[in-house]
Image (cartoon, rainbow, N blue to C red; front, side):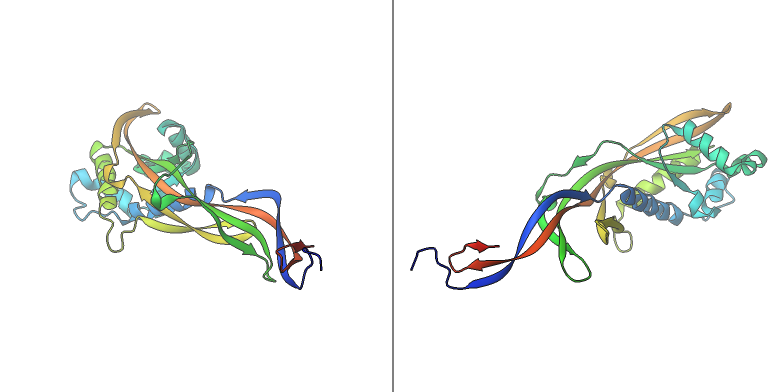
Length: 253
């Protein structure tokens, strides 16, 4: 008998990577973060609507939440207002109060990753399989750090202060139903999955008020930045074929 002779064979899957890689995108994170802050803003109310300082904010409260905050690529408040004015059209011409108060959210183009025991990269986190249960991709998991900026605009400084303060105080009290961690749906290699998103830096958010001129009219703007930690997944495409292992550990294909 030769030393490399195989006594018997055990069937096994032989997995090979074909070099193709797909990852989840940031668009679904952007939309989920914008929707989160839309709900936060929609929860802010004021009871004393007759007080002069509250009149503008009261109009904001009564507005549909889809018109309280917008997401997009806006370079500054002026460019945002130009696009919003064009969108609202005759409503703004008839009544300037249809324009403000309003908020918009943007994401800083810088993408970072998080250090720490809670946010380690995980290789071979899981698998994606087809309807027959055959795996076609191996999943890797990482955590990305993103910075979002909420810009609030109002005709009056008091309204702007109330909006900024309301956002920051809301996020300081994240107990009970006030969650700063939420989930969003995304797609990876043809499979729908969920990712976890966490609002960070919520206790030390800073507001930067400024005066802005728009069509020869003065208004006030305030900017608040928040850090967001989100899961990102990578799928490595694999091919699986039938093989066998001999008792000596030799793979027979």
